[in-house]
Amino acid sequence: TNATVLIIGQIGSGKKRVARALHRISPRRGEPYLDSSSEINRGIELSRILFGEVQSHFGVDDYEPGKIEMASRGTLYLSEISRLDQWGQRQMISAIKQRTYMPLNGRKEETATCRFILGTSRNLKESVEDGSLIEEFYDQVKVYPIYLPSLAERAEDIAALTYQFLQERQPQRLRRRQGQGRRGEQLRRQGRQ
Image (tube, rainbow, N blue to C red; front, side):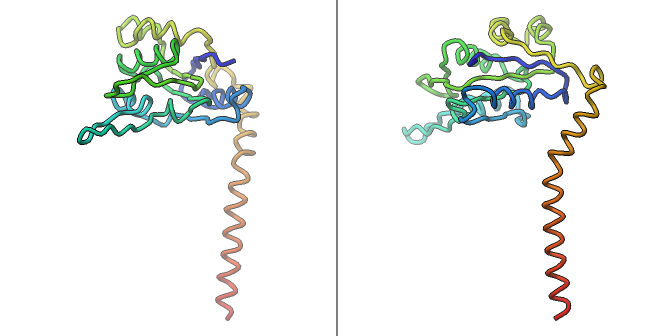
């Protein structure tokens, strides 16, 4: 499906892995997958990163695309959506509903062709109640929620997860060791001559 998905879970519960898995099994799997979970910015800076920005220099507009455009036809994973300011939330409502958004300082709307997968560790209903989240934004993103239990609630998975993480890291460790071995062998040979 191309529907917007909301992944809800504590920090470290695997939201990013679920988002990537959803992209891999979707019809968009051959298109870009962008992960903005590393973006620690808030407010206007986060909006600039997502929606892009138009800057005018001596009457000439210079457009810096945002992640929504860079993920064109693919998937954009946006972690901690509660960090979006009110302007960004309104833009996301438009991007999700009408598939259009306005870059910062822009004069014309751009088309959003990516799928949105959103993540949060916060209770968004409480964010609506305290006024930091627009209710319409909440209504748009909560349509397909996926709730991830914390690792404390699924202790039986720890062994399997540990094995998986070790398997993923093993090739990196082996390459590093082999590289050190070759380099060590080269240094030993040079020392003999």
